[in-house]
Length: 418
Picture: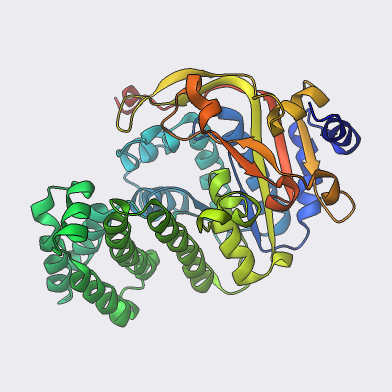
């Protein structure tokens, strides 16, 4: 056990007993433009509820007006329409989430914790001239994004629809199977690169025609998703590092697009896994040539404008699946591995804590230590073999929120639509 780190945590940590304690993080954020809120898993209730409370405080106190999340653009844009009042065909936040997020893993966003945030956002936006937006920045929605483009261009009788249909038809033989496309494009030279680039170029050239209710932004990003998803799925079957980097550069580019759309001074909250928002340069990811959103945003905008908050837990139930595409289940996260970051926090005090890192204390936490990361696919019995990322925690993040015993996320039930 690293007694020095444990004592340093005791000296520096703030006991986290209620939402009001989060004010210390908000105060530390100051005038920064980008706040990156992480999570150690995609299935832990507290990570979502605490991020929601922080987001509300940043919106009300600091003027943040964009929430960008690790979700598909088309699904999140449905939620964005709902909370801004652009569309009235959803009766509730639950309906918007259940109908919007129908691709696995649905529980990541169609859950009770996000529904509560959406309730708040819709109510908050009601009397605001500058409404808060909710956007997905991930790259996976190749077919869904192209369908969105075609649907809108058809609805507006745009001649550009033929370009979109040509791109879509190129992917049709692969039956919405990303792996089929990846193999064909990578090994058989049967790809759709020219078609998606033509689509992206055409939409951007004519996007000034589509200005109602953010449809110009919607078309632009959906076209960007199509282009980058093609690159991602092509890289996925050959090189994990390249596909990861394609994905994180895409997410960073969407953040740039949102800043460009809202204005250069707009303030953005990003919700993603720790592995995306915690600067990769301070993990073993760097040795593998992997970059991430936390690194890219710091490099593009300057560290003085970016504040990253990591999250972790020592133990407790989590929602995840045994295999990709399987039904989710509640699993028990074991106690943090010995000498891990999570174990040191627990040994320092078996209660929830907040750590703020700055010039006065970063050096205390500058050694490399294992830090747990849980994905949508999880095997608790094997986590000691690959779920700990060697990290310099105080440089990877600007603050850390520790939940000693956490609880599983609560997925929405389809019965809520009946």
